[in-house]
Length: 217
Image (tube, rainbow, N blue to C red; front, top):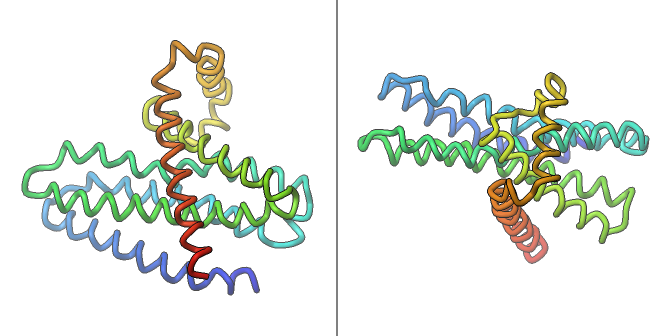
């Protein structure tokens, strides 16, 4: 119960932010009479899964069991790219009319920022859990590699149209696409440019938030 109580302030604040996003979505549906952006709700739900996983892993009996923690970490890593992925939904702005474009920017950004926040909250919890198993230096290295992998995961989702569930449903096809890009990096230079670009953005943003927290805590 202590774990849940510790997270209640964040959960309450995040819930208010999500309700604001949903309110914007309902206003758009009412005014434009289009359900097109309903997919944002599903994307945000997927973004929340890593937070749920780290909440479960926070229970001492689970994260002290290396086997359970390892399985949980892999599952968490598979779903984490869904959190920053919503940023790429900004591409749908090109479909907006002149009358709705700025409202649509606000709508998508509200969902995207919520996804980024809950993803970073999950990463922060995982970072604390990793420090119980590894040194601070190793934990920081894993954190940075994780954010780079998120950049790669976003590419897999947005460009190649794979999702986290495909790791279970079509593992060989997904792994084939991954290994092809590892073995022939020059032929897939756009993959790595996308990965490094988004990964670096996530690293810089996360580190800035960490720095702010250290300065004012």
